[in-house]
Length: 157
Image 1 (spheres, rainbow, N blue to C red):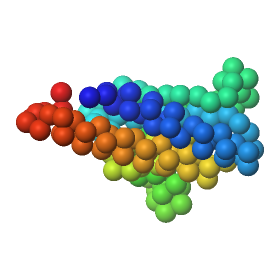
Image 2: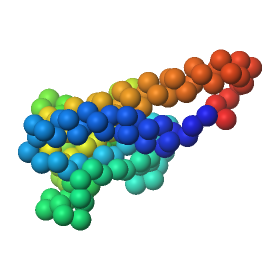
Image 3: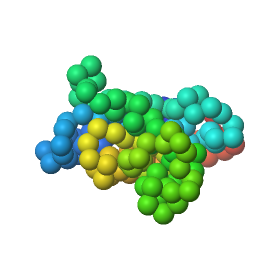
Image 4: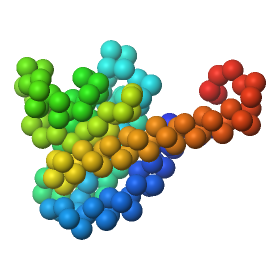
């Protein structure tokens, strides 16, 4: 079976044509993506150790804004609270920490947490959602295909 990181990279690659199409209507064509390991909970690991995959589109060396740092902060908020950081910024502001970024752009789907930064925050959230759903469904395909090929297998590995 593919690793979680391989599946996350595959999901990003799968939705990249849609992201590039979306770039036709965004304020810039740069993006940083952070995918958290869905198997790791905040009480089990540091945030940095729980990052599964990071990926950038555009030219990071030319960025005038630290989109990688912003994406990590969005992902951290979402991972810490198990919900998109938009919820904290619009409904539950009491849970915001002093160093929380005040832009949204993350998405949580089950245990899959993705944070993006680089374009308008609503598009960051859209892209995060595309990637999160793609990860879950690619994992499902991997799981189901493995079950068909190995019906008596009792653990994932």
